[in-house]
Length: 409
Ligand SMILES: Cc1cc2nc3c(=O)[nH]c(=O)nc-3n(C[C@H](O)[C@H](O)[C@H](O)COP(=O)(O)OP(=O)(O)OC[C@H]3O[C@@H](n4cnc5c(N)ncnc54)[C@H](O)[C@@H]3O)c2cc1C
Picture 1 (cartoon, helix red, strand yellow):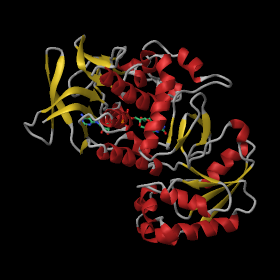
Picture 2: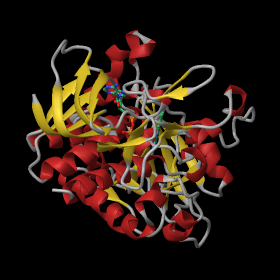
Picture 3: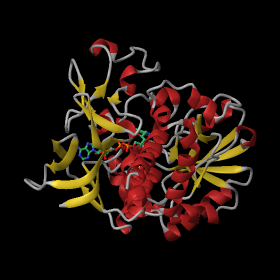
């Protein structure tokens, strides 16, 4: 089976790369092993943390030379940020976010966190626009969203935060088993009149609020249920992500996958690429666990396999390795040096990843593979938690690798 491009991994980086290529008419295949981290993410993408008054460019300039943003080049990043937002829009995902500066969102713990791009319905403010009085809405029995805790955190920032609890009849059957009472299952039953009744109950309690804050449990397939409750509420309202799984994250994943398939892409789910054939400095084909002796051939291969969390990287006591081909990996020191015992400190292992050149091409035993690229959390050089560049690196590198491939045609 011969494709123009084969993308290994169907998370944010793989999907954005594949969509960019498929939009230009290329025949693309995604092979993806399991759930991507989008399913746990907040519905907001982080580009980089900035200090007060600092621009994205100034923050990027301070990153180490091996960071993916440095490889891509500061001059490309502004355009790539715009491309990501437009690409999401074409997939039916409306976002808010300034190209030049962060906004703030509220986390499941009620903290404020800087972020670059948020789904339109999630909380998003500039610091000077913080609400003065909010109502945080809890759903009776739902343990993955703690309105009291969130209100207490917001109170410490000078926001007057009240809470209210609403009972949702439609969730009754989920209560039979505590493990069923999770955000994704709630989202499946919250539709139509259930939403309208919920909105009426909230409206009765929200007279004093400037802003209503809701758990993000609306709209797992499409955003209409989220839009519906926002329309029905008599006060401005926005969503806060719950603990995992994340309904907005799952929706993001589904809409991107749908967009890719609508463009003619083929998505093979629940299969694992386990080896590749290399000849003359190029990958010729890959093999998967479920397809026996089938050789999946392509002109280009994009490794979008994520980091340790998604099995894109693996560790033994004495090395970090990339499991498909043993691609060159950047890591330093021995096992004891990989972790900082202070869990809140920067963790060295987070910057380990597959080595690439500035075109994001990977290498094997020091030799660049001309038609193979790495994107996303698999890349070395980023320290995502410290720099706040998690989703940004994935989204931007995915679109950038597609650009490199397209420019070669
Ligand atoms: C719990 C959690 C929450 C997060 N929340 C946020 C957030 O709110 N905002 C943000 O910006 N970032 C967040 N991140 C960071 C997140 O990693 C990035 O935003 C981004 O989604 C990562 O995308 P990716 O494509 O690089 O990797 P992944 O999402 O890890 O996707 C990699 C995919 O490759 C597949 N794969 C791996 N090996 C193979 C193989 N051999 N064959 C086939 N398929 C394979 C995996 O199954 C997976 O589906 C979060 C991360 C985690 C872990």
